[in-house]
Amino acid sequence: MTDDNASESAVVIERSFDAPAALIWQMWTDPEHFKAWYGPSGASIPVAKLDVRVGGARLVCMEMQTPNGPMQMWFTGEYREVVENERLVYTESMSDENGNVRSASEMGMPEGHPTTTEIRVELEDVGGRTKMVMTHVGIPADSPGAVGWTMAFDKLSVYVKSR
Image (cartoon, rainbow, N blue to C red):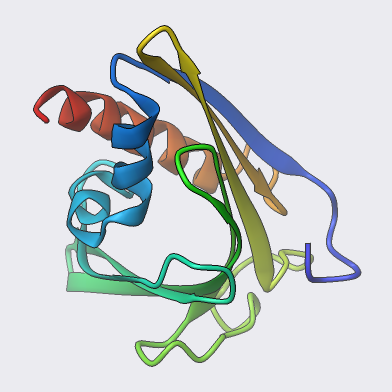
């Protein structure tokens, strides 16, 4: 975590995919693949800039349709650890479309929500299948973000079968 006062709550999700680790790695690191599965049901990802190297930046736009028209949420971060086909660690903060970090309170998040969280993705090859453990540090296990991850991984499971 980068926020000293942030709680150490986390969402931890383990999933297995009937695909090699190298393919699941591509799902996380290739912008076109990432845009195809990321986000909850109903979300689209019109922008995914992923400079996947230690110190590299990421900028992602998630768009949802609402009764008042499309709503966009922007996220930025930095890659902290990149071990191809095994481990990916990056920070995530809400931002504007230029990657300028916005505080959680500016974005209407509840008090105590950290400005910056950390996502860790660990991949393990298990006989041609991949065991993935994703840990999102800084959000409570019962948060809307946890539900969003579950929906995203359901989408990933379907998408990876078509590859």
